[in-house]
Length: 192
Image (cartoon, helix red, strand yellow):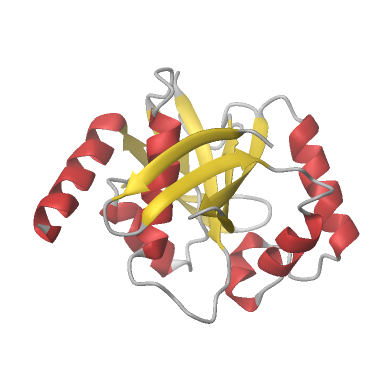
């Protein structure tokens, strides 16, 4: 599969994204999305065939895409990009032109690397903002997912407020290009 984006993190090295192959990647993705740490992904009871079916559905959707994230050439995270005017948030918020929705999931690991999840989120955000048509990134994590709320704030997301989705109560947050770049600059300055 062709790489669609690459980024080198000063501390952790090379990150890349490639399109998910629903059939070839199903076994790997199944281990990720059914892991206890992925409970907010809402696929805990899915079998491998159901995971393949879900990612085929995403691949066929005109407003939703899934990408396998690589760290130093090895699969390490999953990212989804969607148009919130057509997927996930239809009628639930004040959609603006240039809004892009995003989900991300880091692979479970027995050897966590300090700063890895933040580097993944930074990579996904840099990828989304590499498209000049992207004005804001919109996310809607479960209100109980406090870890991701903190990560989102660290890369510049601003909370809009809670929204009720059919599958969860979510915390709608948005991040502009300027907010992301300011947060990244502040973080990198603090690391120096």
